[in-house]
Length: 535
Image (cartoon, helix red, strand yellow):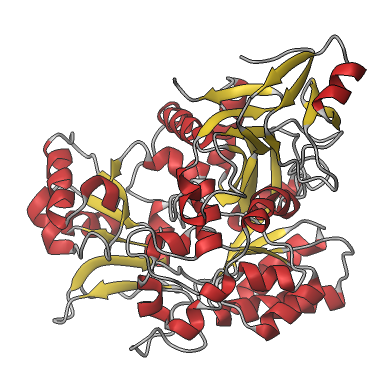
């Protein structure tokens, strides 16, 4: 590991996110203690070690304000059914068939990141043909719906005459029979421990198994330049996993988390709230839900999806949502509420505004997770509240022209509205929502700058493009503020944590459509090198 009592770091370019140019910075322990030119620091600290990265570019560590480490740790133990991994329906079914053939008694076959648009449509009967009586469940890349085979449906208690749970739906073929799709609460209630309702026949992996998934995720994310994250849906089991990973030296990412709201009562009894923890692992706030997903086409819209009469789903009732937020707000803790569609955002703002008026909590700024589809009125209301936006950084790049086919050109120009947020003075954070979107921050920067699909080249909401400098600030300073860390993260300045990344090119001067190709050379957390590129 690359550590020293005092080290001066420099490179051809240093983007410190400071008010004045910085050519080098001194790190003592875990923090930056001085900045200036290389010569100034060498003169002032003659006994400090000097680490010069030559032609490289140093930026503050990338900070993903909404990603899912607990969920990823589980997914990495199962089948990768992303389009990049299977490419076609035949490839997906072959992968499922192979896994079913080696499954032991009582085992389920699970897969994640299935994309029905890029890979093709898979239903109950196709999974039956591939897996027979072995229960199979595969989740869509949006993580808000999945597809199950007949054995899995039976084990979960779903049948052709089933009524969908509140806030959920069951997909059906034209003849009325279940097609295997479990939508929103029909999936969330049985698959994810953080949102589960009661017992489920789907066995979660053990903590030992999930620790393997954490190791894999942390290495991948460090390799992409991530130094901090916020796990945006944590259960008590997830928190126990993260604590163990930290205690065993596996959790080198600085990790905040949003506790799933269904588990908040117990935390409140223990006096645990926003900010509980330390610089390595702490609670950022509490997670709630209003609606469904953008990529899953289940978000709550004022106008229906293009070419349909479907307005999406509200997955938490208004009265229950208000009760959840009111308790957290009254305790002085931050909420991060999932709201994608414009109708969902307005409903959430109604609750936030009511509480701000009836129970003021000066300085308490709630978040809107995803906050995907906005308009001028929503922007005005958010600005007045000081609400924080946490939109998808990489969705324009990942989904490309499909977004316009689902929402139309007028609405896509109001989605992931980084330009509008910045112009309205709204704090906006960098977020991948992985596994729902690509986790690489540099791809997120490219997506914000170009708004073009990487597969089809389609321009998606070009009016929301931002500069590379603005995009970098979103993924550093903005994310720090969204997690309550604006005084210690996001900048390379005295007193700030020495979290930084060394790149082989400058993202602020690179051709916009090549930003994602910039290589990460080294990743440092607290002045300690946690990842380096093999030569």
